[in-house]
Length: 261
Image 1 (spheres, rainbow, N blue to C red):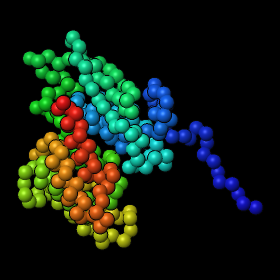
Image 2: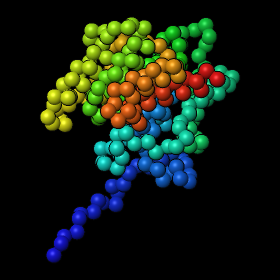
Image 3: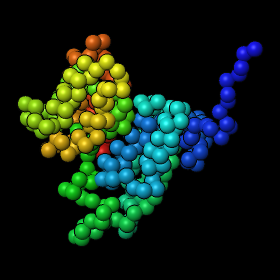
Image 4: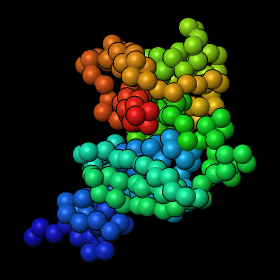
């Protein structure tokens, strides 16, 4: 007599948007996915220079990590179709930060507006201090560690990372000890590895990409196109990874376009 597969307890369900935020409709029933959280975190960092504790981005990251750990979503899953936005509204003496996805507001809070002649607080940085400005190529690479961090580094990834490093730094050669050198080394070792667990993952190479680049710049559409071409040319199937290096740089470029409008 065959035995039935054990059922998960009823409380073991994916954390959905409706469990975390006051939303209705289809969005409420969608599990929070890692790429959703990474995109919201990237958009928030572009505006504020950090992920504030207690904001929607932080809640999404926590929920996505729990969903992935429980096996309800994959590391590269994305469940929001129309993207995410983080917008700022200036009022007298304060600014209102609004976080939205699928055209629904999921988070809103206020901050004291920084004085133009005074120092910025730790969460109200000037663009010169690295906050509130456009998303850089280095930050886009670090976002890849979130969206595709478990992917073993392949030659197409190494080529895309090298193209990103060249565009970020302006150098035409690979920097010794830089992120491109690390990616090429990882791709070489992975090609020789016999077991999957022995392979170096993208998160191992890209988690501190900004620091390893040395110099950086805001991601543009031209940068995104160059990185995508490098990834395509070095992939056996002539495709790019949906949550990989070129996808992250392209997402950063799109967000930067929105910021500049």
